[in-house]
Image (tube, rainbow, N blue to C red; front, side):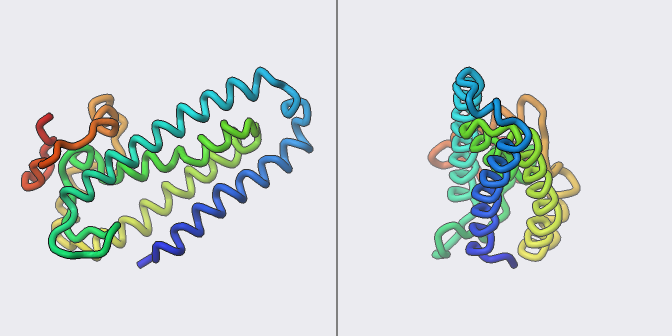
Amino acid sequence: MVSNFVRALIWVVFLVGGATLGVQLDLRLWPEWWSNLAWHVLSAAAGVAVLLAVLRISKVTGRWLARCGREGNIPRMQTNRLVTAGPYACMRHPMHLGLMFFPLSLALIMGSPAFVFIIAPLEALIILLMVLTIEQREAKSKFGATYAAYASRVPAFNLSPDCLRRLFELPPDEPDCTNPYMLAED
């Protein structure tokens, strides 16, 4: 199992490393972009919008995990129940889908073309591969046959409009967490 420290370190490397490499590439390949005020204003506005979406998705999915994924007295940020309601009813990794856009939000806020068009997409691909390997393996180990049944019915990611809409809707105070694969009533 990958520790939270290692996960945090990966994010630091993605964000700081991506920003540093992006600036270095920009100064060599596109130095004129650094003095283009229109690019920076538009890019920063788009970056803030993407960041707000990422934060909202993290808040929504985190609340679903907190309300449906915890039974008993367990450490904060841990789950011991498989969550299959809300956005987890239509995709297995909704929080990770949102987090894949975190490097892009920083890249846009910085106005770094290399980070936006080269590095952030590569980091999103690495995140996707990590989810499909490490996260899936950990979930299978933790939840066994229950996760296998869930995985056979629910895709890892789902870009349907209904499922994407659910990424932005907070769960009710007391959601129905007992019905697997069912979308919670609003």
